[in-house]
Length: 456
Image (tube, rainbow, N blue to C red; front, top):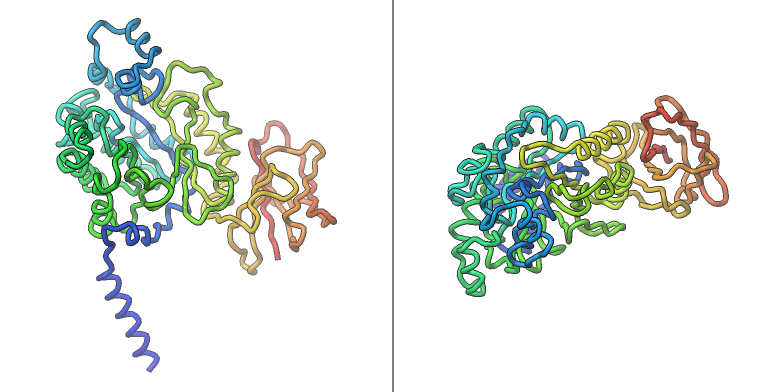
């Protein structure tokens, strides 16, 4: 009788799996469980690379700021450096990528500790970094580098790393005639969607099989104009990445922090507390731009210390950090970006066990020490809880008081990176008092320090 019942459950599950189809409605699409790999990854790298990397002045919004906003600094820059009549498309032949080495990029991404990468397939300028059939003479084969940038990087990442490969895609293009026509018709026509946007999305999914589709740039239009729910239903039901792909929440006006797979809500989103949904903080190493910006100095970049602190605080409250860099027009990743990524990777090589696959603990930020953030990393073989306390600033007195541990029985405390060293601790009326070890200046333990505790 038990065997019959078990068989019935299996059959029912199989039938359910065969016939479960996501409908083109947000209620249905939002019910799809997020593939586990994304939450487990915690840290990814984004790369903004396009024609805007040629002027590399102001930001990746150069064209719009110049022609729509009439930015005086851009007008002055163009007048001083380019001949009369020079237009933005004239930058495309200079986007030559002659120093682009996708294998070296893949190696850097691996060393950074990133578990996924999001590469710009098309930004708001409309130029595609792959040979799109729907972007004639405004793509990376017909113009500029004359190579498939998306394909080259995807191949290298998959050949040399275990990183999940994803693509950023801008739904609209500022000055595409069909988009401008639809906009002038108050988006009651959908010629741009039908002839450009939707075919391009199918191109990148079917050709490159991205595990992340990071949508952006909806141009003021709602998702019914973009046909977003119809596309996502196909993506989840029938596409070659249907079982692994994750998407964000930028599918039309009004969808931010409301509809999609993981939520970004706005650039640099970090709520500081646990949310009911999975979220991502997409932010930049270079403060003023997502694309490479030449007109800045070292103060225009976040330090490694600041970026590690950001990673810790984001992960402690349940988020992922997607950290952006902007390569140069000729395909180089500038040393300041390289240094930041390598140093984050160095930190993760020591402290990653309390970042990857972690979940928020009962407390995320300590009750006595605002510079301490927690994660939970499961249980040991005896069933005791493993909790990590990450210290962002080193105390002057050599000891650390953790108020969040006041009512918990602590069995042991160790610092990651100091193998076999058990730290001394004692319970007080205010919490757990830990004696910190002496760390020499030459040590690799820096930026933030992780205490791994066994709790009964």
